[in-house]
Image (cartoon, rainbow, N blue to C red; front, side, top):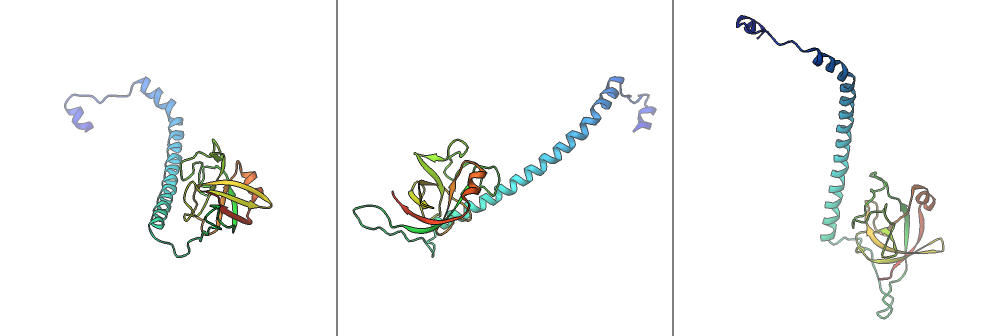
Length: 187
């Protein structure tokens, strides 16, 4: 191409002093931009993986809603008049709003932002097994303390008689730990 340009009498354009100066000034930033771009690309890939896992979990939960589970939690009424269910034993853990896969994020399955409040209609938010419908009000008794809770979340390990109680931070969740207790449906 250079020989063609010379044979036609057109001289190749040389970069101006300004272009050369600009190139020298931008060269260090170009490396930083390249590294930032690579980091962002990795973050996007990781977030896509997390999103894919959550999509699979949603599909699994949706299929469970349509299928009758064989080990469905039995909920029995004590009598038709009092409207309360009998106490059942359960295992209770705690979680807190954190933007990571282990904690499940900051938004519940029903769309509540746990960073804004851990309560819904004055009841503490809890993740419950899929057999217990959303917005069911529960009483949970652990270590002699009764927690009035409402089902607003789900979780991958929340099955059978396992529940996850929303806490304000990591310290409170870790202090709560894993406990045995009992629970019942109030309404």
